[in-house]
Length: 293
Image (cartoon, rainbow, N blue to C red):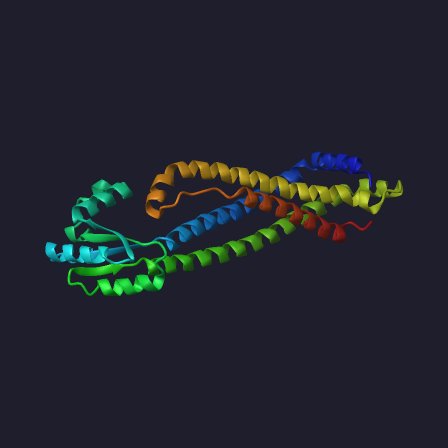
């Protein structure tokens, strides 16, 4: 098979059926944008989950009527434990100021009651403190009279992991739908291209062209459609990400402790390569059905 001749016919086929291929590429761009957005969301949620899973932190909320002496005794007792790396007292006023600063809604906290921001002890745990020791520590701390509640954040992290698992399942389902969409769009495009070039195909066969020479341009067209669409989708997704990131990065980093990142180069390359393979498969399936040579 003359590769140069196949590429020339592919180029001519794109030019002759430009509107047909343009519609197909635009449709595929939408599909790959949805897939890319899902992958981007799951990837960043995974980073947040990993960061929070490693967080070694406890918050002890103090009773409103707790005496300074009891609070001091509690803090000294905690600082003497090997599980505690640091214990810091946060007053109600400071808690209010921190919330206003982090959430950037200082005016809205003015009308909130005083008990909305209770005094607390913020504990940084020693590295290597496992979940069992954290729960045991929390149970010990609740026995102090000055303690109102102990927040270990374990239940929240567990719920977040459940949400992340649901997101991963949704992304997998979406990937399957994109696969079906790519096969359908490219298959239909190749079918229409075959019909449009039916006379050309008949002339080639009369001239002794091989089956591979006849099928080759259609196969390349399907691959190029998928590669072009996925590449353009990744570029558009990157542009949208950069625009949105500039507006929410600071707030998101404050709330989660993690900065967002775009899809890794390996993931982007994987999407494009996989798109090309699926495009080739769609072309083959369509040619086997609609092009009898």
